Image (cartoon, rainbow, N blue to C red; front, side):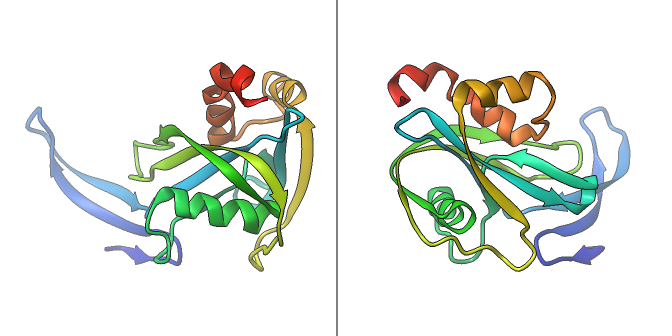
Length: 170
């Protein structure tokens, strides 16, 4: 253990690879996360414009959050994060799959969900979250990916994963 953090741990591990080479690997141990594509009945995606200090500015993102001790399942995390970050809850949930964002140095897994049948709820941002909530047509959000305004990997993956569900979802 090199560092135990609030969200993840940083370790160095000595590993012998299948080719017989032994190396020291630096690994971020992460508890996992959930990310949600919230889709309204009108075909709008609820997107966040969120400040991210590590990248020096704001990114367009789907709501997401790290699993904590209270989250028994990825879906429980997704339900909590949707309300906290967007101020909406969902009656209908569909698991989309799992994403491994940076397997070269982290064991993080992000579980992706489609949330529908949205109703207003009480937004409850963490003190360190600077977020603006936007409702944008799905076609406009797709265009934001293609013109480079959306660069967040989990957001692009989530949007891609609902592509074949769009007729069913809207």
